[in-house]
Image 1 (tube, rainbow, N blue to C red):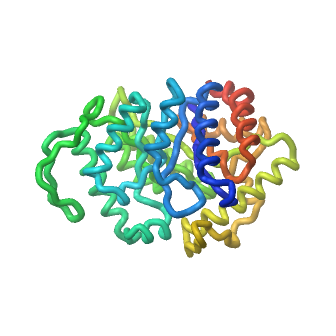
Image 2 (image 1 turned 30 degrees about the vertical axis):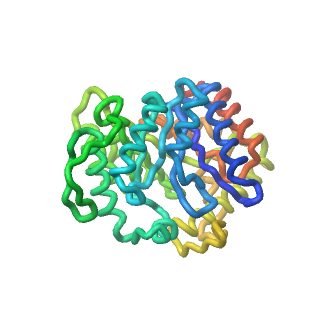
Image 3 (image 1 turned 30 degrees about the horizontal axis):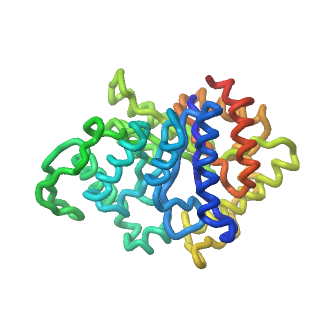
Length: 338
């Protein structure tokens, strides 16, 4: 099982500033390569202080300029927010600057507040995503592409520059619904999923759908991979664990506000709202724990056949703590899964 650090910029206090936060993310990426992580990932979100990265391809190229071999994942870019005729060229350019290390994770958009402020009704995101993905694949694979659909209508054109390899970079789909996972694997896509704070059975169902799709696809080479995203922190004591669970609870009280609603955001800052889940229930579903418990929980994922674990370590801890966290995971946890 490969290990990935999710560079998920979170700004609990606006005074910390974007410049300082993004510098932290690049430092974490460089460190991740140095200590043996397989990859780093970055997401796309706009107008909010949680997962605050409106330009993931720019961050990807910045990381590529400071590293040599680590893979760089977008997990994910939100296709309905972009015009594929423009975005395809940006993707190809980023892939060139990343020297082929880019894995393009794509999704439909998860936060109603964000999507509708950007002029995309949430009930249109599935249709928009499906057509955008088809247009993007055509533009990355073919020249002189024309289109006549519901959201795209254009005469023949060729995206320049052309990809390093036709169809590159490879595409990873962000999907949570098991049946959706199955159908995406049948199309040859890599998968990123998460049960979020859901129970273990949901994860089992997600993995089973992936395996069923992989078997029905019937490939023996270039097979789809399954990545799992989890919030994590290697704690050093019970007191440390309690403080990090408190931070995670506040983080999710913001996340839930824009993920499930009502979407109360003031001057870019998501308002924390009360949660139905207790701190104890949340702690059980996350990887905020000491060495042995983390190894035990990760072993369950490894035994299920997860190819890559994406660890979100930025949920409010100090940057120095995140640096120490990366070192601890690399030195005391990752060797068990090599």
